[in-house]
Image (cartoon, rainbow, N blue to C red; front, side, top):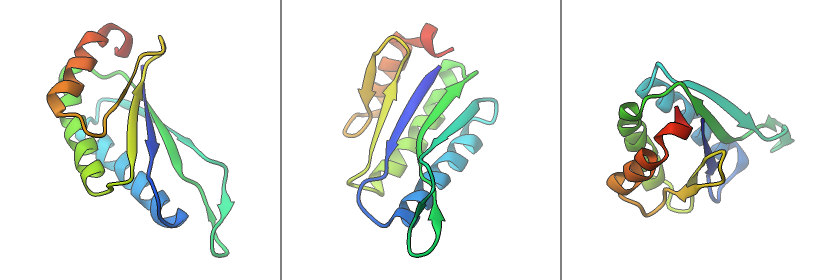
Length: 118
């Protein structure tokens, strides 16, 4: 199991919610065999509208090779949001902040912890 923590950075809550939802959908398309569960904030009023934001995605049932496509989606999402951050967290407490890392470095981290992710 891998938890992907998402912080969309600055911006209006509704825009952040839409950006996080789009990331979730893009990841589902890049790895259709993966089980991806959303962790959302409680609904908060934003300009007379209740808005929830995805704060984490819990990924299970993914083989290591599938992560290459998911990493591309995550890196593209980060490139378009300079103040956003994404962190990988494992059950054993290991974590990696994806911001500023190459896909190769992130893949190496995932390879080192492949048994915990599966």
